[in-house]
Image 1 (tube, one colour):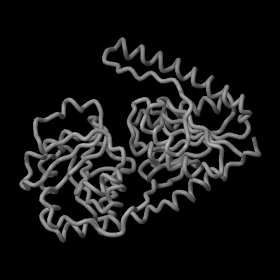
Image 2 (spheres, one colour):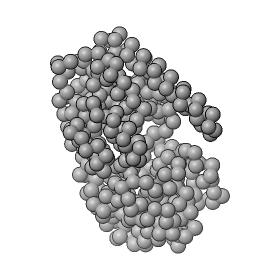
Image 3 (cartoon, helix red, strand yellow):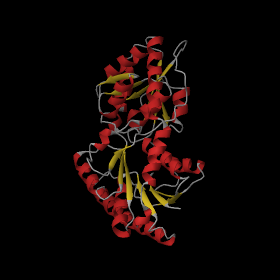
Image 4 (cartoon, one colour):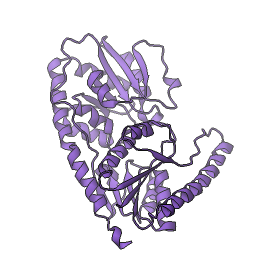
Length: 365
């Protein structure tokens, strides 16, 4: 059996859309390949979910100490380079010991993993696939393009991501969703409405504008739930009983189905795919998102939510009030979201991912 070497990075101990997709890929590949997973944090949510799949990862080295001074940033750069060399040796030793060098393909899901995959290809001759989840800035885009020029394939989660590569070895495979319900949601008879965000709490996600929007709401039956952790957590801790910080969302689908009436995605940068938007629509939850990137495309194509300008807390509150103002309006958004999510069927994703890895000619090694 041929081997797929998965390179993941859970050094920040978070769990987002990218890692959810990695788990989907692993699930697809385990029936046809021997899957070997390397990760930087054995105690992460990602690894806990691996255990539920009766899988485990091999520990990679990672420098994760916060860098707040110029000196500590220099130390981090040096340490990171040292860990790259250690991880190269670890993975190379593993491949040699298992006699996998001529029958393996590396799958990298992050830029750290891509650097490793690039060097593994140079040193050990093992080909690699890169799963691109991000719309990069110009400098990083050039670096990623350089590192992927010899990749077997670049999987892009959307056309927005593929535009960065314009390469013969890139292709779009959209993330998928298993639509968990067939009937739309309703707000009929509700005494409280839950409006929520689900994301890491950092600057680019725009959560501070979501918190600020609460003060402009006319609907007095709304509560805000904020799911996620990150560096802005302490700065967002307002003294308001109607704004509740819930920590990591361990089961996003269950939370969307059982709790949330509207999902807000206030990110101030273009999303490369917006997995949480698709998850919300698959549960019949209307979405309010910023008017950029794939988040805009999802809302325009689905007609299952509203768009707002970035950093506009007042407009955000108006859209929340509007969606909750009429039961029929809410249900229309919910129905359209369900129909849109069906277009991202998990069976299509499974077929395309499996086909990509099976198309690799291991016999030519």
